[in-house]
Structures are given as C-alpha cells and as structure tokens.
Amino acid sequence: MAEKAKIAVLVSGGGTNLQALIDAERSGIIDSGEIVLVISNNEGAYALERAEKAGIEAHAVTKRAHGGQAGFEAAVRELLDSKGIDLIVLAGFLSILSEDFVKHYDHRIINIHPALIPSFCGPGYYGLKPHIAALERGVKVTGATVHYVNEIADGGEIISQKAVYIQDGDTPETLQRRVMEEAEWIILPQAVADICRGIVGA
Ligand code: GAR
Image 1: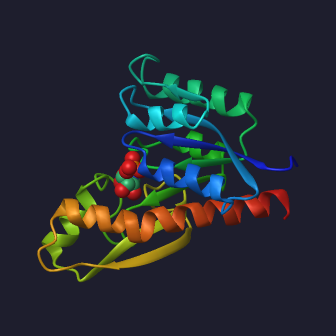
Image 2: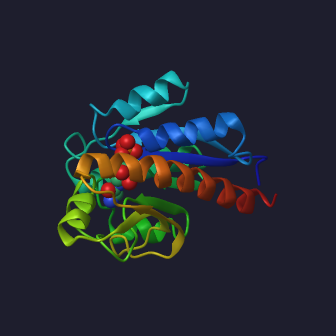
C-alpha cells in the first residue's frame, strides 16, 4: 500500500464539503490520505474551481457528453482506475450511481447526507430537500450522516452521524448552513481521515 491513500472526490455543485476536505488535508486532520482527483457531473460546478485553486486534477464528466448513464460511469471508472484511487468520496454529488458501479467499488465509496438517516433520505432527498422536509415535519433535531454507498440510495452502512438542533425561525437555507457548519464539515473529514488510516495500516 502507498504511503497515503489516494482519494477521489465526486461533486456536483458549490463544493463546500470538498473545501472542508482540502482544508483538513492541509491542516493534517487527514494525515494518511491525499486528494488526487475531483470529478464533477456538472461542468458549471464551483467545486471544480476550488479543486483547481488547490492544485488538484479536476474533470467535468457529464452524462450528456457520454451518451447517458452507462457512458458517464465508464468515463468516471476510467479516471478512477487510471489514478489508482483507494477511496471515493461523494461530497454533494447529486447523481445516483448504478448498482454495477457501486458493487465494483464495494466499501470504497462513502457519501455525506444532510439528515440523520433513516430520516429524510432516499430518492429525491438531496440538497435543500431534506431540510425542507425536516422543517415541514416539525422535528426538533436533524443533522448529517456519513455512510458507505451501496445499491440502495442512502441505504449503506452508517459510519458516523452528528445531530444539529433546529431553531425557531429556521428556513431551509439557514438550517442547511448550520447542518454544514456544525456537522457535515466536521464528520466528513474525520471519517475520511479514519478510513485512510485504516487503508494504509497507520
Ligand atoms: C450538502 O449539504 C450535502 O450534504 C448534500 O448536498 C450539499 C452539497 O453542498 N448532499 C446530498 O444531498 C446528497 N444526497 P456542497 O456542494 O457545498 O458540499
């Protein structure tokens, strides 16, 4: 095994979780892993700029350019395999991967979900939607979950969770921001750090 585990981060949008991972690598929280590749399924994602600013190889790979899901996944697999990636992190990656893809990388793909699974998760619950649903349901506590990715959307083994209190007057946007600040940006880098130590045997 290499001295450091090779990490790929898959993104779709703003990339604040990617930024948290970059910062955690820089500060030494992630001490046994190195982010070597960023892939976005959206060519306009600001996450791509964050990667470039950090000097990380970044690619936009779209379904449109590859004739649909199968071509898209083949292109992503080619990139991952050419870099010898050990761990794939879905950090705000808002596209569902096929059963074939996730089985190929069994227990090598993790995801951050902005709710306490099994609440507000599964198909259709992405981005702001889990927060809208949490406020509509009137729960008092929500949070974030890091989990392994399997063929069931948000159904894989849970790695870590952190709770966040809902406050009077919260909107989906204020809640999303607090869940990011108090939970996602903390538990995702920590999980990546722990898994990478396990991969390199540190
Ligand atoms: C984050 O809140 C992440 O948990 C969520 O999308 C946002 C992406 O923000 N992911 C999902 O909803 C996956 N089902 P970011 O691009 O700033 O990291």
